[in-house]
Amino acid sequence: MSQRNDSTSKSNNFVSINIRNKIIDYWDTEQLCSLESSTSQADPDLAYLDNAIENRVLGQLLNTWAEGRRRCLDVGAGYGRFTELLYRFYSEVVLLEAAERIYSRLVKLWADRPGIRCHKSVFESYVDEEKYDLIFASGVLYLYSDEMLYAFAKKAVSMLTKDGLFVLRDFLSVQKPQVCKSNYVKDVFCYYRTPQFWINFATHFGLELRLIKRSKPRISWLRYSRVLRIMKKLRLKWCYRCLPVISALMHLGSFRIGGRGIQTVFIAMSVK
Image (cartoon, rainbow, N blue to C red; front, side, top):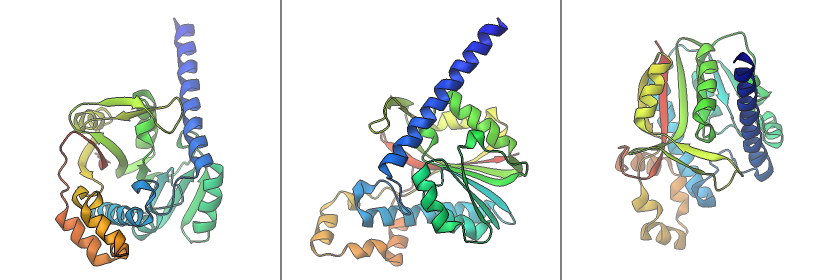
């Protein structure tokens, strides 16, 4: 029986490593990430808007719970789209990135900042004896199976300080879980989990679920509307980079979680 369990464990480990390598290879080959956003229909102004809003929302979260904190770890940091924000709250920011080309640029962008350290590694292989006040992962774990996610979380929780924060930027399916093949990463699946999943997840690890909140408000009335087309025609897209406009959209757009679509959210949990 023990030999069978050992064989199953090795097989699962091989599958997990294979999936992680495919994800890393995809990002490294396509180089899709940016300092702003990898999505937003390849529109740099929309990307800027999304990033500015998500940084503000994450900043509000950290402003509530990150007082007096010292160390944070950003898993899958990309080019560092949240680094400037994390640097405001934490005296030591560790950026973890496994994709070779992305990591090379990450180092050029941030390594000369005092208190910022870059490491080329996947989280599962990363070793640090000192605890973290925040472990943050953005847009990665929805590509992990439940088994991989639980293994990731088990290690993350063991690396957190008392009252430490575990914050994910992930994708949420409100009504029921959805699993589908990724349109981009070959032979890898996307796992869109429900609020109830994350409630159970937090309980399993003895964490307190602080919140699940949209990372950006619902502003489809602007993003996919005639208003946007007029703005483009009149070359007014610079409005998306105007701070008062960003603030107004955060107040006008709804952060309510609901509907049937897949929503981008921040999930914040803390060690009890």
